[in-house]
Length: 135
Image (cartoon, rainbow, N blue to C red; front, side, top):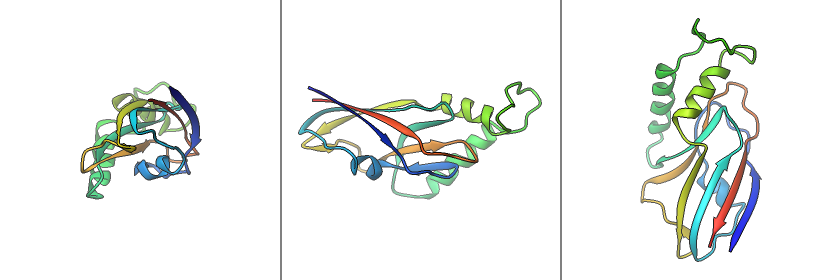
């Protein structure tokens, strides 16, 4: 059986945000299956990583900004602001969708894993996720 729902995330500031619980509050999980999460945006993305130490989030933001700086003279796509083209590049370095196994009615993540929204715009807006559950 396949279930699909589109959810809206709360507005998150620029940076990396743990959204596992925000997603789980809006869906019901079967006993077993696979959950696919797809973000419908090109300047934000998803990733799975450590959910224990909050400094991981800060380090992600620092490294991504060093790798893909704003206001570079070689960017030609600048009409939407200095953070837009870097946001598109950063989202391409991560994922637009992730898959997570479901076991015993719970996401079968590792002990220190969580789902992150990677928000790359300075003036973020609500982001839409399509959740597809295969059971």
